[in-house]
Length: 309
Image 1 (cartoon, rainbow, N blue to C red):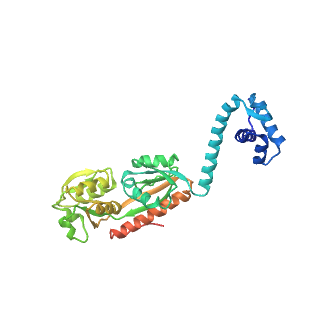
Image 2: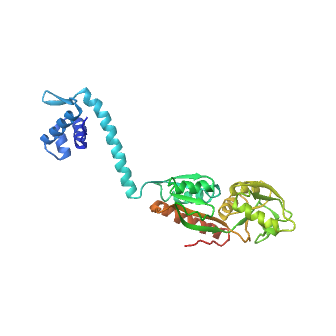
Image 3: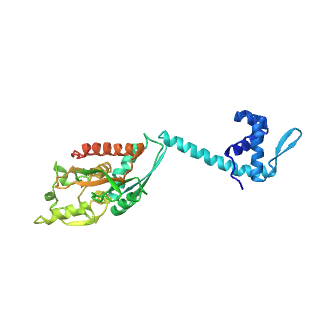
């Protein structure tokens, strides 16, 4: 079959809706003979008889009604594509994919989205929680437009947007004795049960290094890989722990107690994107909201924030 003319399909659809060639010509702003030629061209290309004349009127054939079903589907699809293109151009619609290690996806990024979406209701995002090496792989392969991973020097097929360093805070259950201190140090954990982290996490490595330098290290009663889970365990009275200030904010909102924590290390992560790409207006807005959220959280937690430009 020869290629069909989009203009001829449009004429066919309008003639069906109007029930006359003259009405279609007026809507299309062309002459009646031009509409008739378009219909004849469509009949020749499809090999179908689409209209017959009866009593001075044109009547669609059964074949025309069957063809109309497919034509309508086609025009609905084109209309949707045109609307999507217009919305994207005007910044009204965007679907982006973000990959993040669980410690960030379950706290900082979820809260940032909660702050952003009321102001950008057409923003659509897929937030994927995964291990660090998978974050890098997803971004490098361009399956995700933005990645949040443990601090990395990986340079293959990704660009580093920035490294972020957040101070730790101490997590305690309500009414815990250490809440009397303005600032908590590892030495203050002696004699207290501690909720630690797996040695596959940066926070776990940091805590184990600090405990190894103490004459009498505290007892780690439970280890977790997520700060949000450590917060849950602390709230249940199983011990004290440390976490990033965003998790600390959630901990305090749930009735727990937080205090600034003095440590040589900080909670760090890298924000990455596929090499050579731009974020676009929606991800730019997300990035700005993230910085605003982290700054506000650190102020609330009474801890300084180091955000490189």
